[in-house]
Image 1 (cartoon, rainbow, N blue to C red):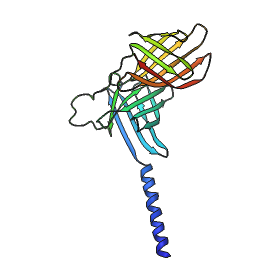
Image 2: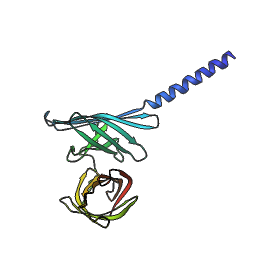
Image 3: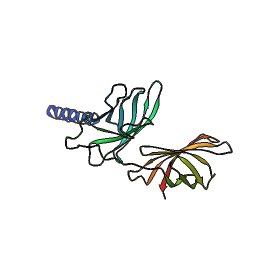
Image 4: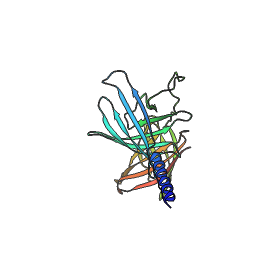
Length: 231
């Protein structure tokens, strides 16, 4: 009986240790852009396994912005989504793991790094065999986009290079489009006083994406599971 109790205790300790070790798995990604201190931008992303998923934390700083990052990472898609909150600024942080690399392609709000994206490497170590910048996906918002949103008539948006966005179908509204990394957003308004915005995260091929419709006036709710596809 004594030996059985010892065996049971050891088994329990092994299980507790295994669970604890698994829950503490962390991965750190870092990058820096700019050589001058006054214009230098740095970001640190820590991805930690927690109960029920993966948590994201970190810090972003530049000459004018300092904020703390908090959000989630989704291993099944390799995507990261978080908010960066500071005293004066609050920005969205999006990212995706680069195929074949231990690195993340990041976009921090409208404060983008390295010409539009920042590539953060595991522990800040860029592979020695990599002589140039990491290959990244470059999307374009120009063209015709079909949106489908639950409970909303599907419509077609035409976006020009200056960001002018016009809807065909639905309320035939107009708006302003913007593209940050692979986040496509259309802020729209109607003459009847209704307004809001669509926001989609485009896939790596930049041809389709998913996101939400947020109403600012007329209604104040958010409709998830909105999709968009380049036609």
